[in-house]
Image (cartoon, rainbow, N blue to C red):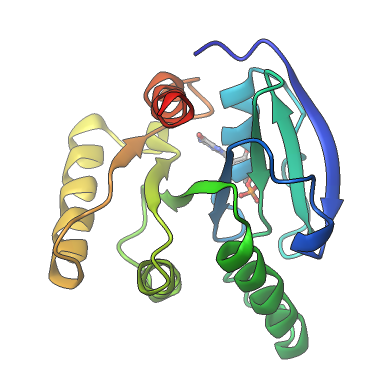
Length: 197
Ligand code: GDP
């Protein structure tokens, strides 16, 4: 799939105020600073559709983008930022939980993981919650350019093994680098396959 058109639609804290759920939707989420905005901009081939390098923990809204007039890309606020207060964290949990559990056109969620990190509790817990709720998800490793290719492969393998300890079936995994403009096609092809089914 080629992204011919990508436009910002709206930002909300309440899933019920999001655009009417009449197009397939794909959400992107991960720890603050994981490279989510950079990845989204790479996917849609626009420099600044999603805002990069915001102060971590600041954007606390559900952001909708309309792609090719046929599907929604949703940029969800990141988790795991240490300086966020308990009240803020609880607000985030409610907003994201409500969205993920109730958004009827959500096809799948892409969970972003910094390729340099070993499996972190915040990510594993988040994925466990998705799994328990029956919400399909895929994993995208980000910032692959930060490691040598052999190290990328062994980190992915270590992550896979960790997930196999928890899950019978490991979700599909993608490797990306926004810096090197790599990893776009397999992600967009996956979305296209869903859109056509
Ligand atoms: P977000 O907070 O998850 O949206 O992360 P951003 O996209 O704003 O990126 C956080 C930081 O990581 C910024 O300094 C980016 O320049 C950097 N970054 C993001 N993606 C990549 C990547 O693929 N490679 C490298 N080397 N740095 C990246």
